Length: 166
Image 1 (tube, one colour):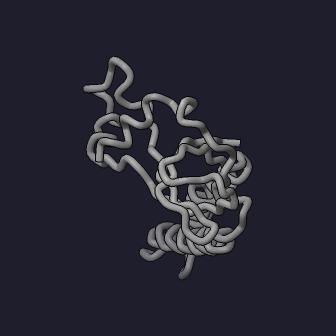
Image 2: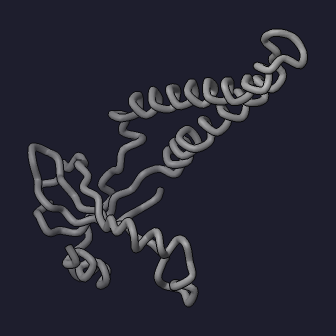
């Protein structure tokens, strides 16, 4: 299970609104000034995300720290669908278009077939990916779950400092 710390902002009808701090290793190595990833991290600066998760515990109060978790298989399956499927559609479409000859060998339109079918393959794969994402939107296997509560003494000391930087 992949786990992440979060802080409860409010409790509303059996759901908790939590703020999850984005964690990145960028800025922690000696190559920070010349690193492209660190430059993008400074440019985008999105530090937190708000999530709504089911919370059936009466112990939860705003300000409490919790650990959220999601199954590794769900993360891997979603990553493959979002990144690999459109890429495969693009490649398969381009390969198919390379060998399709609309009007006979050597025609001026044959060079346009590969990019045309690549676009069709990418679009079909993107449509399939969006259907998958919509289909798993309410599936609890693909949603972060409340794993455990942290007592204030157990909460990592760096996280409260990060939350105050709004």
